[in-house]
Image 1 (cartoon, rainbow, N blue to C red):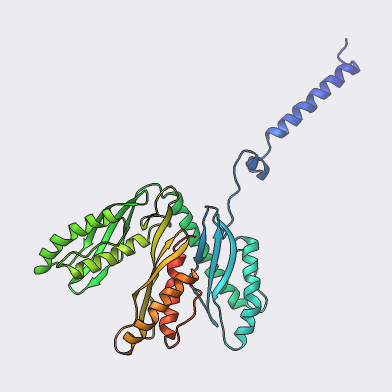
Image 2: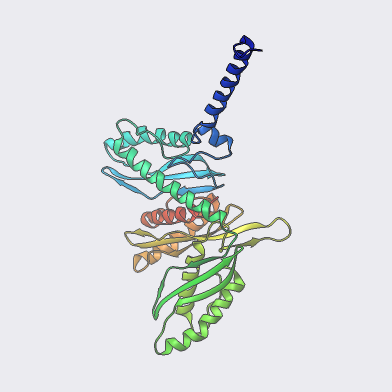
Length: 351
């Protein structure tokens, strides 16, 4: 067969075509989104998206100050998805009432639809929209941090409580929590000097042992060390409140196989015109079983108002199971502070 035979030319042309196709395929960019997904690589998550870490419960963002008032957003999440968004604070008064009533529901809906902070501003509500998105992002950041903490909760954590001031000096407690149990407790600050040295040396080791044995801050005061014991317990509770949901301040409740997790959660102190209000709740199986005010206005007329209103607020919190409780007549400021601190405590529960 001669070189110029038509069949030979056809075979050679076909081989050249195949080689060219193979060469083009080998040069396909590795950055092609389709190839990345085919290789099992997820595309990078967009900023402002809801964390997909199984986060459950309510998360409240920081209040964002705007020209017309504060905006603060609370998210309800289930398995990392936003199921509800609401503004617990929004501009009010005069024209702001109309703008808030019109814009906030639309912003709430947009968040649930977008599952993140990438939402459009509402026309005519520029400041409210900007404040809403800022507080929303703060809530998402907190949820993301909570998700990360929950994922790494298998290891030991070292948690340092806030400094508790006492008549004889500050007390500050640090605990190590592993597997939801307190494995070590120590006082990094305690009263010292004069008689305090002896009291501290005697009482603190006993308080440390009691904290590990109890697994929470419900430890008995050491006789002769009333102030040190009170400060120790306050700082200890503060440390446990910093543990992720289900962490250091949790314990098993009930008996048998159907145990329910119990958490003790202390809200942030809410400042009122007559003094701070701070609420602590015990939550078992997702329900409030106990509520108490660890701080409340005192002195003069406040003593009477506090003794009358706080027990009723405690009962209302347990009955309602949330912070949506009525103010006690004649105790408007105390009631408002109570509800604010109560919501702060519930926000820590993580569902």
